[in-house]
Structure formats: structure tokens, C-alpha cells
Image (cartoon, rainbow, N blue to C red):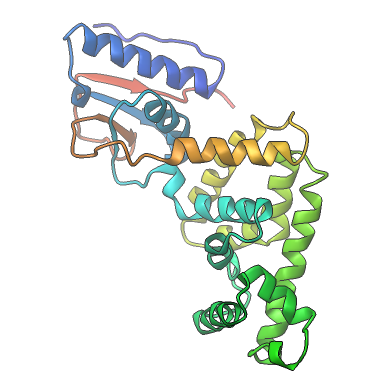
Amino acid sequence: ELTTVVETYTEQEEAQFVVNEIERLVGQDKLNLGDCAVMYRTNAQSRALEEAFVRYGMPYKLVASTRFYERREVKDIIAYLRLIQNPYDSVSLLRIINVPGRGIGQRSLSQLSNWAKSMGVSQYEALKLITEPEGDEHQPPFSSRISKALAGFLKLFDGFSARSQELDMVDLFDAVVEGSGYKEYILSQVDGEERWDNILELRTVAQQYRDLKPPDGLTAFLEGVTLVSDVDGLDESVAGVTLITLHQAKGLEFPAVFIVGVEEL
């Protein structure tokens, strides 16, 4: 068949078209899902496609890549935002308290968890006790250097928390990425540019909630992320559509190929 060029106005509309067209081809018994491949330039471009495939329950597989919402940098930023919404989320706190590095090692984190548990409080409440100790029995078990580092993180986090009541979703996202030092941290890594592209792609998700008043935008953003990142129901052993970068696709052949993100910048 001849190559078909289809113009769409957003990446969501483009992903929707891809899913609908694959459903049409498979429904007409012309192809199986495994015969179809969707190709793009960078891994960050898989996000909108993954969301569409998850939403419609269409099996897919990523080649030489990790699902968008499972990528380390994406999970880090989401953890910051989850913690802002719920300071008692210990999983998120322990994930990002030393990301970027603040000199808080695993031993200190274990001490924090054990100290909090001994007092029957959350890690967040334990951090507050470092700066506001209540009696000798609540004296923190940390060196002055670690206490200072933990107190510094608490100050940073409380600043984000306060601003979340004033900033829209995009401005809050930018404040977290810049204020935490995460941008410099990720760009300093060998594959930093690719990881930074993933963060910028996550920012496009935040833009969908920009018009909601704070903190409603943050709540809606996290609810949306939870829905599309819960892919436990997708069985990767089932033949599915291949999502792959053009670079990885060299030498491979598929009966039906969709190339997305073809645009002038």
C-alpha cells in the first residue's frame, strides 16, 4: 500500500489515531497486533503512545527501553510531587531525600526510619523533630553534619509545600525541578540529555492541568499519572504492538509501520 500522511494537532490526537487505525486493521483480519510497529525519534516520545495503549487495553512492548512512568527520572519527579501532596508518604520521601545527592547515605536513612518508628511517628514528623527537639528522649541520633543535611531537605520541602498552595501545576513542576537542583543533576549524567527529554515530556502532562486552581491541579495530575502508569493488567507475554525508536529499528521489518512525531520545530 502507498504511504499515508495524516496530520494531527497534538501528540494525544496522534496517539489516538494510531490506536484506532491498528484496531481497524486487526479488526479486518488484515494484520495481527504483532505485525504493527510504531516508531519515533527519541524514547521520550513513547509517553503519549503508552498512555493511549494503556487506556484502550491494547498490548504493546517497548524495545530496548523502559516504560515511560517507570523511568528513574520520571519516578523521581513524581515522588517529589507526591510528597508535596502527602508529606507522610514515606516511600516517596525515602526515594528523593538524597536525590540529588545531599550527603545523606543509606545508613542515615535507616537511622531516620528506626528513630521515627521508635517514637511512633512518620519520617516527616521525625525530620521536624530534628529542628524542633522535644526533650532529651527525642534527641536525634545523627551527627551534626547529617542533622544539618536533613534539616536542609526539610526546609527545601516545606518551601515547595507552601508554594503548592499558590502555583499552578506547571509553575510548581518547574519550581521543583529547578529548586531541587534536579535539572543540573540529571544533565550532568552521561545520558543526561535523553533523561532530561523525559522530564520535559512529563512537563507536557503537567500542562494539561495548568488551568486548575492550586492545589487541585496537583491532585488531578497525580490521579491521572496513577491511572496511566498502572500497567499491571497488560501481559507482556501476549503479542503486542512494538514501540521502538528509529535507531533501534534499523534492519527490522514490519508489515505495518507508523512513524510519529514528524514535525518541524
